[in-house]
Image 1 (spheres, rainbow, N blue to C red):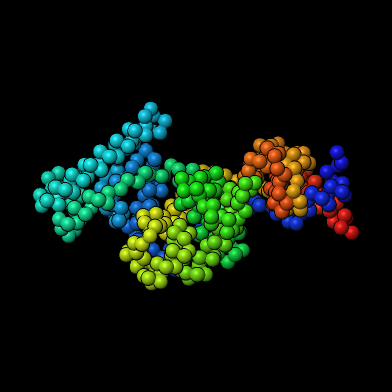
Image 2: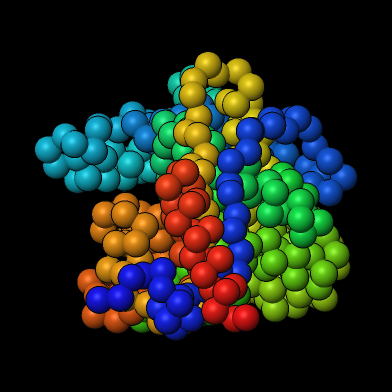
Length: 391
């Protein structure tokens, strides 16, 4: 086999378009509400609820609350650890028992009977009007929410690996840097996250939306590349804002969809009216609460960064090269002295047919490599050879 840096090879398998090193120190953002991200009076109790979900209650705790008014928290129950035998069944039973007890109290109060116990009096205090109809209606809107504080904390630690580069990407596009905290809501900064709805990666792009901004096919799924997906998420949010002219709506559109949010704006006029009164199509609990969750996640993450003494994951120095032509994965691994595991970890967008060698790495793919001295020299030699071959 010819040398991988020969003129012939360099002219046929790749040329280096860009070389980028990602290694920036974290700069903490201040905790404050800005005009771009207002906390409207109508969402204050919802923001507080999600702050408690992310910062107070762990996955060993469950919150029983009203679906439509998150300020109505009925009780917090304790759950068994996931590793406990029959944990799922035990926890399901605990949740259903708690809901039944709340329904019984609401039914009694709705029938006009006075509260007897401290628990009944506390629940009655959540209904200032004391109208029977309100108690009866609330029986149908009881919801369970699992606490997330332990998972959120882990996400903050993981985020240290990504936030410096994400900040650079968003600032380069003229975007508010607060938006880099959105993955706390979407994936807890887990680049391998995959939802039941088919959303993938750190920014949780669905396949259809992903195809609008990324390469998503049988060989490459850029939703799993944290940095490429961040470029796409920044552009999607920018497109949302350019259409909706309001960051609360632009963020809502990230969950609900741009077209649907534009229809809601046309009908209701403002974010506040949409939040309080809009109830069309798939605009349900998740979409209504998405902006409140973002504000809460931003606040909790920044507070953890400021007050907790722990080490965030550090950014990994990376260099990149843009392939000119289809190139066998083994050829790249051999030249840059990478194991299969190391290469796949750095290039999570490459799917099994490519990693198994059934198909070459597609031309124009941006390969990520460790930014060590040896690889930097190899890349420089390769670039020099490519340039010479063009003379």
